[in-house]
Amino acid sequence: MTVRIPYADPAAPGGELDALDEPLPPARFAYDRHTWKEIAHLLTNLPVSVFGFVYVVTMLFMSAGLTVTVVGFPLLALGLMGARLIGKFERGRARRLLGVRIDEPSPLPWRKGGGLLQRVWMALKDPVGWRTVLYDGMRLPWGIVTFTITLTSLFVLWPVLPFIARGLANADRAMVRGLLSPSDELERRIAELESDRGVVVDTAAADLRRIERDLHDGAQARLVNLAMGLGLAKEKLLEGQADEQVAAMVDEAHGEVKLALQELRDLARGIHPAVLTDRGLDAALSSVASRCTVPVKVTADLGARPAAAIEGIAYFTVSELLQNISKHSGARTASVDVWRSEDRLLIQVWDDGRGGARLDGGTGMRGLADRLGAVDGLFVLDSPPGGPTTVTAELPWRERDRTTDPSRG
Image (tube, rainbow, N blue to C red; front, side, top):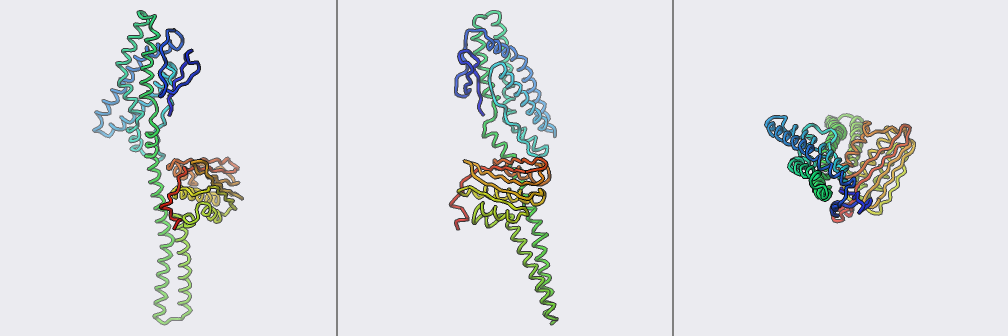
């Protein structure tokens, strides 16, 4: 985030300077509209700082006194979210009266489906809220000083009031800039990644449940039937019964073996296909496209292979999208394009079906978006009613580790 201060001064007409690198506006002996705005800001410091101080003290004392009960920490979380609103008001006041342009902080990264405890915890560790509390807590003495000096100077020190106002306003600019600017990018990313970690954990748990269900209902059941069939065939052989009956049982068991092997192959492919490990994303996508019920044209222009984790996410994203096309789209043709653009891996899946797909439509689109978001990716769905549907996904490109690349043998 960049904090910028436009110098609305004749000395720097229209100039917008980086507040972190450039000095604050110099004092000038002039009663122009900018000086009057600074005077207005200094005079309103007192009522605003009184409100902020009372809010902070009341919030802290009430929540601290109630921490022994179940409402203490939720009350403190609400207080910190309220402090965010005070900070927004103060940034607006500084923008209008002092010309300080500060980006608004990122909103708290609520995780969809997160409960009350998750929201309380995110609010309690919000650095933006705590910096606003610090700002409001220290502003009361400053508000009294600036109000008194400015009001007195209006009647006593009129000739030098522009210099006084500019000096005091510059101190205000520094405080706003230091305490009410957005969180450092690292803080924001940590908060987002902590929220995304829950998505990754939930997704991994869902995948494990799917694998367990497929094993239990599919291959495991068939292997049990196979064991029972072979047991019956053995008993009949021991009893000396007709070879035709035994042959029929063995033939049925052989069929069960083939079905179980196919289900295990499908399950293994769902975990991580061998063709992806051995031949890369282009061949793996061509393989999954060949199983789609709609003709799919695959185009891949990569030049190199990305990291195995990124390659796997890209494969399973396309695989799920093609399954959706087979089941829900009613399309006649589809296409998959994969290419690299600088440090991003881009994927675009298109079909000429009926359209109308939504992130909350029950087709797994939301899960895909969450998975990509958890690794700093993007997921964009464009599916007007009547079609066509275009899904664009972006993933960060990370170079493949050649020392641990399984495809090297």
